[in-house]
Amino acid sequence: MINTHPTMPGEAARLYAQHQTEPAYWPDIATEVDRPEETLADHLGTSPAVALKVMEYTEAEVRRSQSLMLGKVVGMLLETNNLPVMAHAIAFAAGLDQLNGKRSQAQVARELGVTRALVSHYVIGVRDVLSGKRDTFDCTKYRKRNDSRKTFKEKATDPFLAAKRAAMARKKQQTKTTTTCN
Image (tube, rainbow, N blue to C red; front, side, top):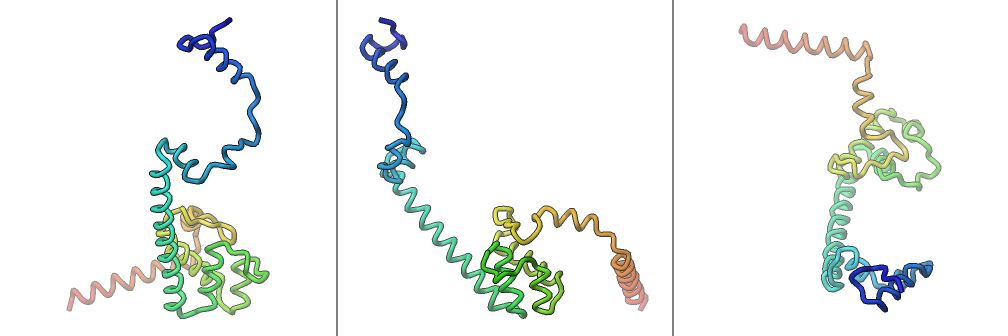
């Protein structure tokens, strides 16, 4: 008899070797009968009682987070000056499919009689409020990725805007000069 594991006695080594060559059941029945806390306990290397406490704590934190998120959404709806745009912005930011066939922010803007930029402004504002400006809430179903905002800003070379900024800077400088002279 060949001992396949040096620290095991002969019979244990034989059973171990036999077990290694037998095919495992698929699907694994243990995953079907284990309770969620048992699966988590195995994953964390702890007892099911501790895993259950972790699950209860996590569920409470998730519920608290969800209620805070709902409060933010209701607050945005109550504070807005343009309820139809805000409602669509929330739907766009969350990537909801229930947009009644609306395919883009531009389409919504045309239907509401506002600019595409206004809709985008609201969507980005909603996204920033709901995410705390983290990329964890960056649903791009109806908009570009959040990091593309920086790229587009750097590439924006509108001569009209550049002239407007220069004129505003001159006006500001003139105002400073006249107030310090008087």
